Image (cartoon, rainbow, N blue to C red; front, side):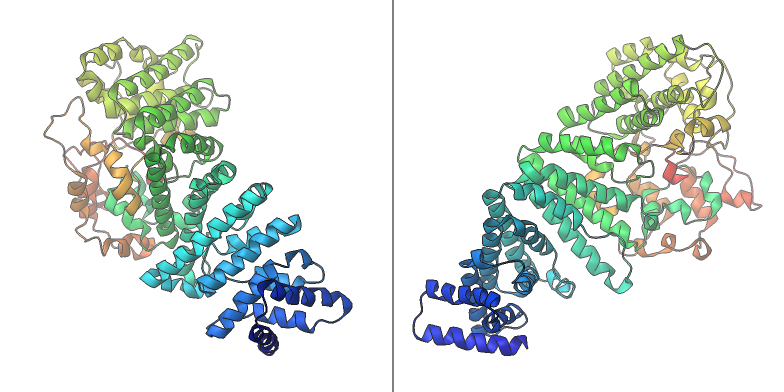
Length: 617
């Protein structure tokens, strides 16, 4: 029916063109078609609606007809009524720019802008139509992987964003409405149809690209913060989703005795997980956006939004494993400002906060950040350490009781943070004479030997490593002997950590997302195997690659598709091989998995690695 009507309308337009009607006369013709509806004469109107339904494989004359009709409608927008012309409006707002060439796109956007400017009741519909064009139709996704598809993408998106900016200029309130519409239309992150997973993933990435484009565009003053926070929220949703379980939830239960897995093994656990892959790609998008902000001197502005987002969402999302690295990388791009500000915010939240869980989370973030951030100066780390020590000392002065993990959990989390940071940084501090003097003046021994018994409560793995380094650095000599062999946690640490297990929360443990880690995080990150301990020699270190190769020799093309992405029943792990890799990275000598199944007991001490990430337990 639409084709027949379009044919009749085409005939009318062609007839007018044959007698050289002007543009204004064409507008009058469309105007009459709109007005005649109210008098009961709808033929011309229906013919006009039929033209709007043309989209696929238009002939040159059909393209000309559609462009002419759209331009004529732009000149007659004041005659369009949402009651009498709802079918026309639905047709216009349902048009996909991805289906047309540049001429039709330009004419369509001219009409959309005119509609938005003519009547406030159309603003939401116009914005919704434009945001709907952020993503291509499903059938077009595969073409985007080709040069012609990328060219089409740029043709569409550049016009969409220009139109949004034009509408915001003409109707200032539209910018405020735009934020809500973009957030509302954000694609779902739950992929149900397996055959469409890759296409849905790509569409989601394009949508995020558009959100970040808005954040850096000319109307960022009105929409920028909301866009960035919404992207971070999407990262968190993906991060904690059921589809993105950590590696040790996928392997046999006995692996809970392992402290920290090699990066390659951990990445293998993600396998072909579409959610993890999307998360990795989105993280890369955000990292590249932050780099662009830094190059354009906007990072400080954007960082304030990231801080707000971190405090509102990430800080108390205890299952988050990756989203927090957005903050980490932003700090790496500007250590002297963003890097310092982030640490100060965390220590202030710990010292002055009210909610115990938030304070414990803040100090866990602080400890992990100070230990892992390669870009922070040793002097700054020592200054933050002093603030923790000062707070813990003041707490000790007000307490005269005995060990009570639940009552004093904030205190124990502070003590554990001090020891954790020193496990990583003690050698670098004592190598600088004036920093060593400051460290020796800190009343750490007094705090740790207090009746509250932090050495008995904090994670044995951290306590043991700390005491070993403290003894070698002559920080102090423990007066008690602590038996920690094969202990990853104690009953006390489990009690003070609570259900959230904040005793095991080290949020900046190595990032397991391949592209994010390799291209952005790794150059700025301190791995335990690179730490110079106070008792070790300088030539004892080995590289990440050495550790990874001890476990697996797969190439990059295959390791994501093997083994660890399968269920425990499908795992085929060589226990001796696994022990060999793990013993190079664990804190205490471990009687390996082979021993637990009846093999020989280990005799040699293992390589030290103090990190005890909750997602690695």
